[in-house]
Amino acid sequence: MPVGLAAVTVLAAVCFCIFFGISYFNTVGLLKDTKNNLKWYQERYGDRNAASAASSEASSETGSVAASTSGSSDRSGNVRKVYLTFDDGPSTMTDRILDVLDRYHVKATFFVVGKTDSSYQAVYRRIVTDGHTLGMHSYSHNYSEIYSSVDSFQADMHKLQEFLYETTGVWTTYYRFPGGSSNTASKVRMQDLIDYLGRDHITYFDWNIYGGDDVDARTMVQNVTGNIASYSDAMILMHDASDKEETVEALPKIIEYIQNMDNTVIVPVTEDTVPVQHHKSNEK
Image 1: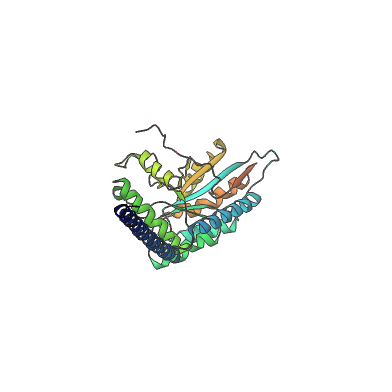
Image 2: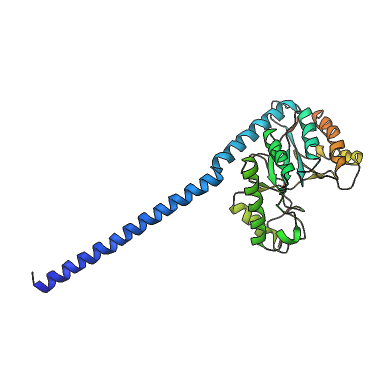
């Protein structure tokens, strides 16, 4: 082999080895950084998937308990499902609501907001330990802020999601839009926000029965009980706030009415729940 050709061959081989040597060490360094980042994330947040699975399993179990204690069912499986949902908590009323639910052996769903006051930390945890479903209702509940852009909505939602996980150990994937998915306050298309939730594997829930705002307990009972028979899946919206004494007063009568209905059970929202949703995908 000519000396010049041999030299070129050796040089090419050396360059080849150097190139792949650099690539190898870069890959090893990247893998090390990735492992370190993963370790940090797991130490801070734990295994979200395991927590989510455990939460879903617990919700399914509580749903079964509710089905056996909150009504009757026929052998055909034609059972009306009623979901008691409470927005805006926790509040000074939450423990009283939880006491009523416990007294009637009923499991419900709480779409909560973010409250860092230490007095509410135990309330978030009680919702979970009592077997109820924990959902999100935005961190700030500030319409002008969360509905100003997709980025603002995303930041608010994830702030609440991480806050609830750090407080209760539940990584919730259930959401209720402030004002519902049909609200007219949003400056961005609701479909864009809905699409974002879908990409993040989060299900949103509206309602088809509303207890009412600024009404007395008797009117709330009538608003709720007068409409349950119209739905095979009745999603009832009530509010959990410090000025909602009527919710606490109306709740026992609402539960008793439902428990006396044929083929009707009270259950919490789970991953198997068929969501009630106001927004139509073709709306602009």
